[in-house]
Length: 567
Image (cartoon, rainbow, N blue to C red; front, side, top):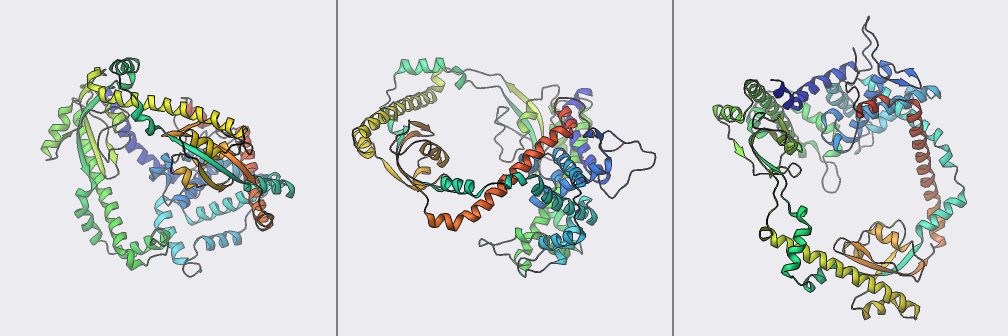
């Protein structure tokens, strides 16, 4: 039984987390006070003083609202949060520190500024007027369901506006840039380079490589690890797609007498989402079917996950008696569910299933014959249940079995070496030719290559088609060119698919007319960027000095992994 709980701890934790999230929203609502007689939990310290529960509660609320306004999803419900590297705990503690400094600096944002910010956010893009309906729809449909009150939203805006003032105050040093420095930086950034380059494609040398049998065998022997087939597993699986519950979802929606109003609220609070290819907002009637379909999919997913949880509860209850693959097969047979088998796969590649969740492979590799059942694995369009089938040991296939792959790798490696030699030879030939008064193009032609001209570009160039079409990154070309003096040739630089040599013809200063026209805006932007950088530098130092992140660091080092919410 203990082994079963260990194997299914992630699945069980998923259910526990659902409960915790709900509790978290309630306990960390700034509108809920401490119960009498409740002792204060340890939330860490800020500049040596204990962090208060209500202060941290507000910071968590701010962090959640901030994420929602940026992405349209709540961080505890959005799979992308982890992909984006968003850490709710760290974000909340950073906001806690900023809120502390707002008080310390005496920065208070008035109600009129908050009201104006609300008007700015909820202005109808079509009419330019404040939309009370959109605002109330946001409060009821999105904030209400997430435990966020109107008062909490207003406090968030107060803190956000205060944060802007704090940025200006501590970023002031970044604003102190002399006009002369901004002018010099603008001229440097907008100086135009004229260059030519030769691209040497590795593919041009593939046909020159001789495939000697002895050389291929030697290559295989020296690179056995490259051709080794790693450990693989194969599992039985049952997939419960959410689409199985589309009909039930349609029935539930049809019985909802408030459906049209809910759909209208969805449209009003997500108007930017429903646009045509030209960016023009569509009318509600134009997107009615789309919104209805989204509601159906969400409802089917909810029902599907509930049914999958019921299946999982029954499955793992049986597994408490004997945790073997037969449990999944027998239960699926009783319920008329098809059981399939994956092809053997490695832990990191995972199975050849287009919708398999990222942790499918990792979970499968934790299984064994006597601990055969894996955790419940939610995917975007359904839920997987898996059971161990077999484990295949690593193997080194004989040369004959991988000869074709060995030949391909050997040919490409030798072609790459030939390309490098050609590039090095071109650099030397071009250097000598330029010293003798010849052109780079002529030197390239004598070596059997064609030199191409690059349209004039600056240090902030983003796209150069003639370069990018040959697999050369614009940034890499810029780095090479602006590190050279006019009249000089670069070394050979390897890139995917080959390599290149570039010659700098000249540099042209930015026109004075452009300086006069663009420098003021550039200087303003530059000072803003430097101010933001100065603020981030200050904030980083204060986060370190205040100790606000200490509990999270303790967790990362393997300390007490429990997060105090409330006791």
